[in-house]
Length: 210
Image (tube, rainbow, N blue to C red; front, side, top):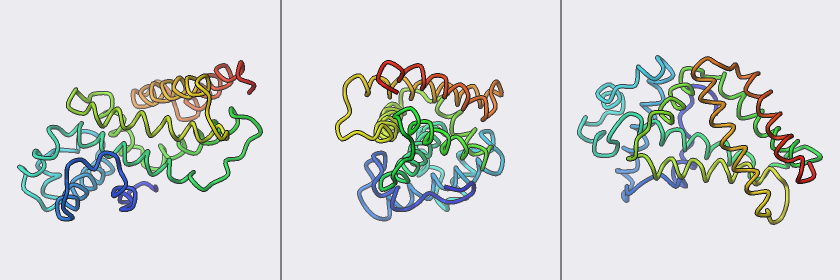
């Protein structure tokens, strides 16, 4: 997903966080609102995403925005889930290169981390929303964890993932998300994020044969 692009409609329709929008028009409004929030984020970062301006850009009433999303953080977390679902889907029918699980997970991490710099204001806004989201976004935050875990589990390249391997994947997921928080805070560059992730992946998978 290149910076500035709209969310892929097929990803949205399959998304676990499309919510209770049951009619095509409701789903279309939901989609337009999230697209408008992401466009605003691309233009001015987290602070540029305001509920009223998002409503105007999406062509809906401000009440409609609040009916679907209690806050801008909730709205941007949905966008973050959709983004990661799109990243996950890129690897569905793709043979991930690498001789070991570590190599393959690092390949996926590298590809995903590179995307951060394609639209820095947008992805910084999405990660900030993840940092600030409250309990109202718990289902979306849980969905985000499931999507990222699934993506990394596929990277291992085994028919059936073991309990130990799944635990390792969850650790890497936590390390990646905490690294993204550091990236947003300006404490790490994207290169430093990858160096940190490589160390974590090698250490975690050392006992599992690579």
